[in-house]
Image 1 (tube, rainbow, N blue to C red):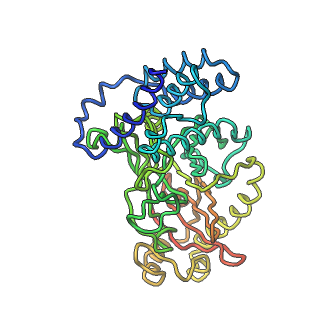
Image 2: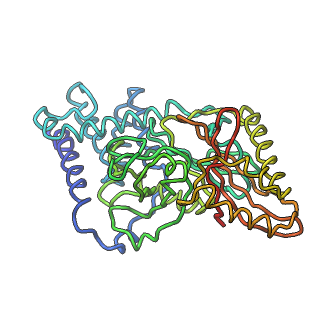
Image 3: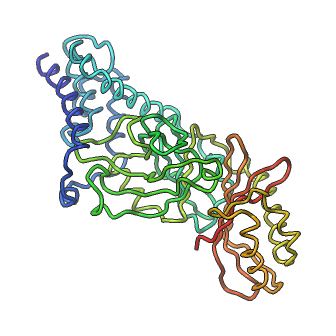
Length: 408
């Protein structure tokens, strides 16, 4: 009984010290490189196995596995809490997860609440798996250049990592995540919210250049994207990053707006994805659909894009401009100010046909219907051409381009 009480009290102290460590002077990056290599998802899988054994009334086996888990991952606060509960259950019935004395529960009320929420979300992810063979509805079509893709379901505190093979998405892994302290749908700088939308990994920051607060590395994304800018959203510095050494994971809502993963999970993602071409969908709740169900929308939009291509190949400026929104914007330039650049492109093409290669469509729907389109634009007779990204907005029954730029 004394041992159980000690563990239960200590887990709160460990977690509180970890929280304080975030603001303390950071250790040198050298310490990170000396940490043992841990397989992604391994610690969570072991915790869920403990839960399974508890559910089967195999308390002794659950206790042994929990003890091994916290021995190997002493900074895994949720596992420590479960271990303490298992010790306490040997002498008395438990009232709830984290059944600590009332005085301790009161002093660490927020921490206990966060750990209970984390536990519930991890269990929910185990019970509510995406249906086999389904994909998030945003992925209408990915090109071969999009070797991987990421989708985040904030309601489940879950990140899903996909591999794109021959145009077919395969779910490789999924991980628990933390989002902004104030939740989701970022609007202004400093609102402590995580943005919702379609983004791309823009770089892979060298962990040696980062404070320990960011863990083993960071992958920035392109918030605010052109759709965000169109709606007046501000802020920046949204990353996928890891946790400080003293903490295995963070509460479901604990960041300044970034998406945070356990370090082993982030390491897997860093090793896997490619910068600039990896899309990152961040949604309140992902809608999982069969690949076949999105094909009609993909084909309809493909017809629109081919009509744009034909208009550009015709070198008819009036015909081409009909595809652009009246409130088109290119980094501060309106349509009239940007049109000379488009005219210059047509002059250089000299009426040659163009081919669109490696085309991808990503569909986002909130208060409006948008499409993020990426393709290589190759003039007839050329081997290569610029890689472009367009943002289209459905206006009534028509799709209109409100941003277009070269990304490679």
